[in-house]
Length: 353
Ligand SMILES: [Zn+2]
Image (cartoon, rainbow, N blue to C red; front, top):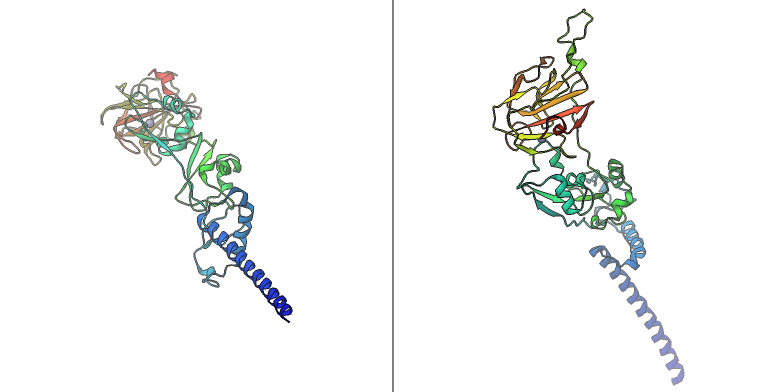
């Protein structure tokens, strides 16, 4: 009798133990999922497991907003990943350690790039505003130094990894594999953060002036059959009476800046036809462009006043305007460009600096 009772009791005890162990396993499993979702930190070995559990959680979680999601604002995001529930998924934000450098007198873009072991283009990669004709690369200005060659991209709503890869012509994997970007599957980009695009080069916007033929009609005699294209001498003179260079020609600045007070005369560098004279919305401020009829054009930017009109013929040395501080300009100076067949060239090659 006692033996039978003892056996029955043992069976009950063992089933209780089994239940207890199963309960423990359930609790432990739930806690692991919870920890992973909260911290986002996953041990490398558990990555596959955590991805799977995250999916299950996202798919099966019953949102208190169930049924109302359609009327709620959705994250404008079309990243590579299948859509997770944006209410439950939050990835890691990028963490970049960017150093800054205070530009010293005598620095050039090349000397700064050499000092930090980066390409000169990368100076622009971290500082897009340097290309905005603002004469910003000067002593006393603090610039961002990128840790590697590439572009520091400000994430905009709607940006995707594929889009960035296409924009900069680099492989998607290069962006993902750059660790400080903190990109983990499902690879979401967050507006108001920055992503480093390794190997990318920031394009410099180049504004194109009107064609010579678009202004030539104003000076030609109708019906004469003659196209009075005035052709320059092929030599260039200084556009101002100053040699106070504040920025030379480099990848991010396709001209030279010469500082001098507002109101000084600006001379036509060579003979030609004015193709643009007026306000330029792309940072040049008051701008004159002279087309020299031989493939060359000269640009005179940030002017205070303009004495010529489009279509007008000017001769080398004519006063065409006065120096100023208009447009994206951080002090009175002239920005002078020489373009040959629409390509910006270093004016110092032509006028000596
Ligand atoms: Zn300039």
